[in-house]
Amino acid sequence: MIIWFAAHIPANSSGGVNRSISEFSKNLKIFGHATKIIYKKQHENLFFFSIKIAFHLCFSFKNPPDWIIARSTDGLFCSILCKLLNFKTKTALHSHGWEEKVYELEKLIPGKLVNNPTTCKARFLRFPLLRLNLNLSSLCLTGTVEEARWIKGRYPSAKNKIKLITNGTDLQVGPYWAHKTFLPYNFLIVGGYTWKKNIQYGINLFINIHKSLPQSRLFLIGTGKSDSFYRYINSFKDSVTVIEEEPLDSMQKWYVTCPFLISTSRYEGGYSLAILEALSRGAIVFSTSIPSTREFITDFSNGILLTGTDEQSDAQKIMRVIHEDNLIRKISINAWKKASRYSWKRQSLRLEKLLLNY
Image 1: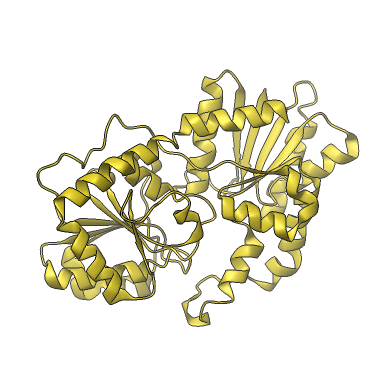
Image 2: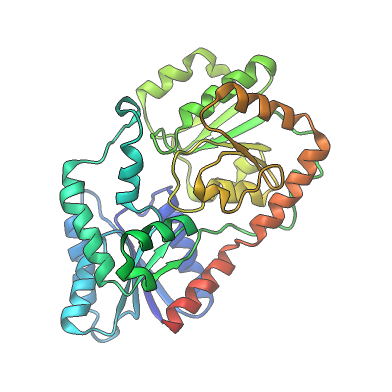
């Protein structure tokens, strides 16, 4: 097969979308398929990017792709072309985060907490185009069971084309942290300073922990730039390391620096890459009990679920766990075993089988 991936992101993006399509592309190449990734150029808006992919398709008539897998509305014009001109190419809508669903959750959050809210342009233009692309695409690849069910419930006519392909992680030979005699009190938070990631809550948890464990350290990775964020952590900056942006191939060092990961997301459209990667190292994950995370984290088995609303209770729960060596060892081993079921190779084989047989 010839498979194109397309996403309106820069080629050097450190986010989860780039990690996902890069890993799928790499593994499908290993399996013998021809793949390429189409990124946006600097200052290229979404509309022209979508048209650009369609032009690429038109000029590939001698050797057209079998599949174009594009994020959100990025492949809309390709879907239109394929329908109008009866091309052999099929399109798949790659949706690890359905925008309309995000907006429904956003409306429940106090407005002062929502940075970068959904715009009127998105609601009245992008959402209809997304629905149109769902109708025209051959497949819609979702990242969680809960999200797939939500889309099927909202758009029952498209239910047969909605398929689950989750994120993955690199396989590790064993749980790195399970047999360490000493675990430093290093806590890791990965993600941008956005209302969806809700890392301010995670910082509040660390503040509570730091009162009892002054030797504890917090590592904030991939926060992006935010003046208000720096003002917020200024009072205890000596205990905090901030990396605004970290290349994808440099992330692994943080999972062997920090035995504890805190994930306080309000929403994840796919399985959190940070959580999966931490699990693969046998790290102890403390995560809010959102639907996507509950699909692969079981409380006190392979991770710890938090309320996400009660700072004192959640901080106390974390403190209890990090002092129980036997529990930590059990969770670490189970975490590694669970992550091993979500290797990028295994997820890519599932994607290959789906594309070959559809």
